[in-house]
Image (cartoon, rainbow, N blue to C red; front, side, top):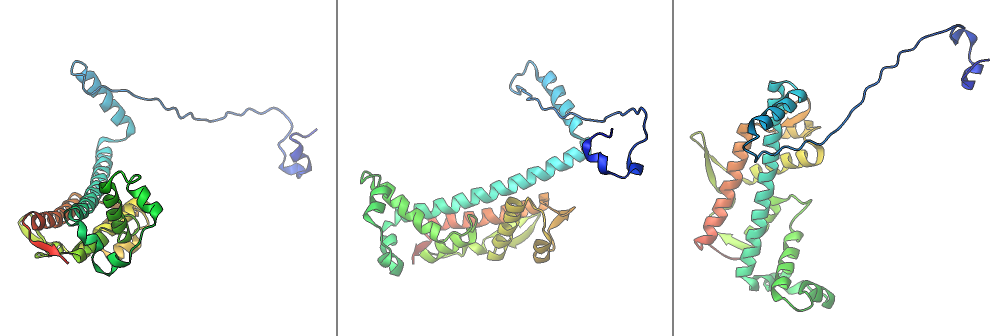
Length: 256
């Protein structure tokens, strides 16, 4: 008798010899448990510190863990800076249209754009709020010029087309270690491409991105945001934001 049944039709030479055999299985168990640490409890600070250090050592070697943590920190901060900049640009457009509501009806687009009664009813919260209607119309205009959820350059260009600034926001300057540099449309586009790579592909498969921007750093096929690159991107975005804010607060702009 040969068992399991599937083995009955195999070549006899492939079957084990009759007799007794011993087998030793190898297996592993992965367990997860939640860890609660009260970092605000000063009395148990030393115990909390020991516990966190113990957990950190179990994750990996201190130097390797520190490098990974630094990489994650700069990548996360880079993405947050981009998000904050995007929110700033959107809110700036909102504020300018609040200050110049008549701008919505000017020009060829304003004359040809139409809304249904249902749209007006919904956007005005059943005719209860003219402010809600205005906000909704502004949002519609912004979304028309915003592609794939991350086109900051499209929003800035829209802002420049609707309001003429005495100083071009893209030509704002900033200093890094005594070196004066100038922001540009190309720099914003570069930052957007890096951001999209991190968001959509976790910073992997970056060969095409490295061909476009050979100064970027990649390790084992994954994009690395260094401290130097992070600083330069932050300064570039902040210089553009400051230029726009300074032009608006000082009245150095006009409606197109």
